[in-house]
Length: 101
Image (cartoon, rainbow, N blue to C red; front, side):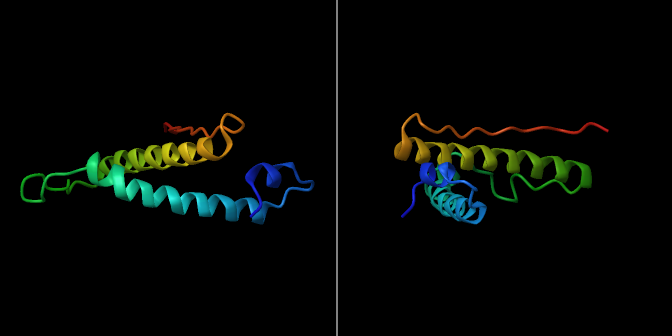
C-alpha cells in the first residue's frame, strides 16, 4: 500500500489516490468515534426528558452544534491515526468559520 507521504511527493499529484487514502482514513476514524466518542462522550437524555427543539431556528442551531462536535471528534481521530503512522511528519488541522449575514 502506498503511504500518504509517497502520494504527496508524486508529481503531478494523484488526487484520486489521495482521496482514496483519506476515505479509508475517515472510515477508520468513524469506527473509532462510534466505538468510543459517540458512546462515552456524546449523549442526550431520552426524548421524553430532553425533547428536540421544534422551532426551526433552535433546531438548526442544535444540529449545527452536534455537527461541530462530530467534526471535531472525527478530525481528532484522523489526526491521531496520522500521528501513529507518520509521527510528526504530518499534521491534520481543522478550521471552522461562520458567515455572518
